[in-house]
Amino acid sequence: MKMLSSNKLCKIMLIGLLIVFLIATSGCTSKSTSSEETNDEGLANSTGNVSTEEIAESPGITMTEGLGRNVTIPENVTRVVCSGAGCLRYLVYLQAQDYVVGVDSLEKTKSEIEGRPYVLANPQLKDYPLIGEARGKDDPEKIIEINPQVILKTSMIGQSSAPTATEADTLQSKTGIPVVSLPYGSLSNEKSRAEMYSSLRIMGKVVGKQQRAEEIINYINATMQDLENRTADIPESERKTAYVGGVSMAGAHGIISTEPAYPPFLWVNAKNVAAGMGTDHADIAKEALVDWDPEYIFIDIGTLQMGNEGAIGELKNDTALKGLSAVKNGKVYGVIPYNFYSTNYESALANAYYVGKVLYPDQFKDIDPEAKANEIYTFFLGKPVFSDLNEQYNNLGFKQIPL
Image (cartoon, rainbow, N blue to C red; front, side, top):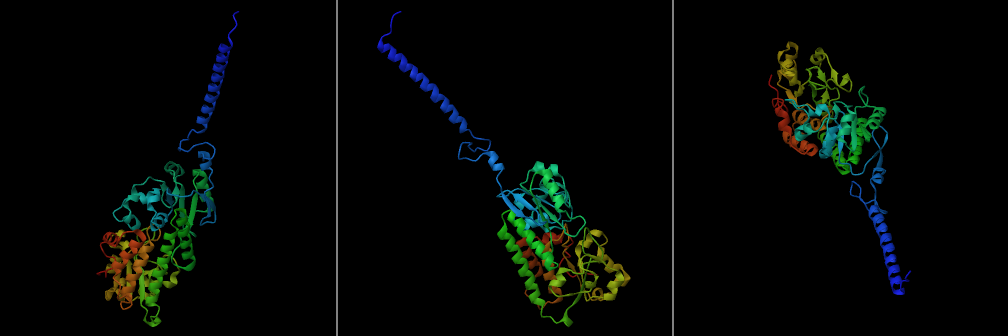
């Protein structure tokens, strides 16, 4: 066999080395490209970057909610659903209505009379997907389809329908979505007011509206203090006796429906003739009202939904009631209903200024009740909806009712 020259042998060896080098570098390049592939979120999986799995396992924020449960929620929450009476109202107060992605059946119901000012200010809320039935009867499957980051759930503590921590845990387990439960609270006493304020703060923390929550609390306190300051010095002997009838409670009611601790009366130091009937809603006997014979009668104009003018019709047609001093003296006035899927606090505060103006005109001489109502509605809801609300009740709110 003919031997290769040394030059040819060197060339062959050089070519071989080049081939080996190219193969090696090709493998490294392929491996490098694979390590830099991006996932569905567009995030690189290479060392030093965050993977989808790592994002899913992010600890988020752990907080103690209104029922004492520890719940971990994502950071920067912008998608929520509200379950339970009044929950959506608080979210609107916090100016976070754009975070809503679903509502319950009552929020979607369209009716001729809409007694919830927050819906009048935000009619788009009726168009959101359904999450279940009213009063916290949630449909986990529907909630999962909507895919909120957090479920906010209000409870009326002390009522048989109030959700428990176990129910909140069950809903959270079924959906895989954090459930933050909140007692609705009220402004009727210090304990209930503390519950309300705590819930506003917790909800504010969930949706990043902590400053707004403090603004709401400060506004309520300042408003109640203003009402108290105007009337605190009125001597006990000069405080007016009053009764409120036709008070709405899970629907329209007649003249015997009242609130013994009617907040507007408390805030302006009026003498509620029904004060001895307890602290919550009460139905009294007509004979008791005749015996009390208050100087002033205020009618919750939500009573009109009963037909035959409700409590107003009773005052016009019932022989015994027609003999009341307030009826004979023309001292019967209409106030805005504030119980509609729990309490509309903005309406309660607005009513207090009107009641104060009627009972103590000198102390409220600088107040135009309708203008004040619109100021209050604008603060809470972003829009002056008094006229829209009053029109639904034949414009009898903040008016002397002709009998």
